[in-house]
Length: 356
Image (tube, rainbow, N blue to C red; front, top):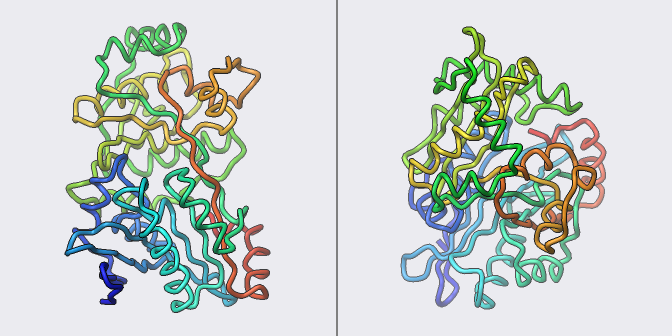
């Protein structure tokens, strides 16, 4: 434990810290990627946590979790995904520079050669601090730059009214078809991953996570603050689509989807989204998060600029038709401690080592 007058600092490499996870769950929106659960799941790919917690009179007020991984024999990379986290972002001019100073020190002490930070909020003070400390925008990782959320305090009818008329019609069509949505179990993970891989193949991208191990770890290691719900769309005893939902804090995230590509007229994906939205509302979550849309789509929505199908990518257009409000996230930033080793690490980005 370290001290800095008003605040006390605590450093840990443990995979379990209920107090930290509770702090994260009580933050608006929850910060799943900073949890111990996320660290345990990422451990299957060689990532190890370094957690730094700031307390004021025994109450957590800020902190961050670095996931550290050695890349081949060349050096270590550190990643703070959706961090650092503050109890309050507004009016925190005193604490923000203290935390960022500790970020650089902790990374250096743990022999990290490249440190990547993706803040959970587009806060001017946070971004200014990153730039003042010589962090630069990075392309080493692909991060979500915008998302779409539905306010679940609305009634079911109000949520439906927010949707595009065509989307409402597709949901009604699906409900009239002989397709069933059932809850999945741990035994269904291979089936879901195969469906996810098929949809990735059609989009020309690699599945992320790249294999089933991450899903098994999430399922077996989840704690009371985290709910995982797997839905499967079944037609004639064949599983044709599935969705993986993760609830943390007051937000349910529609994290991953899989679809065989068959029976599109039965509207399997539309039914999965609708089933997930209603389930999240019934479970008492405040928001339903689609997890990603394009930055351009979010900017247009925030500026009240009309959007047509030709203005955005197909995935964003599909999600926008469910209604909701956009959220913008900042870019990811990097700080280089060793330019030579960093050059090797950036070269190996081409091999997609950092995807996991």
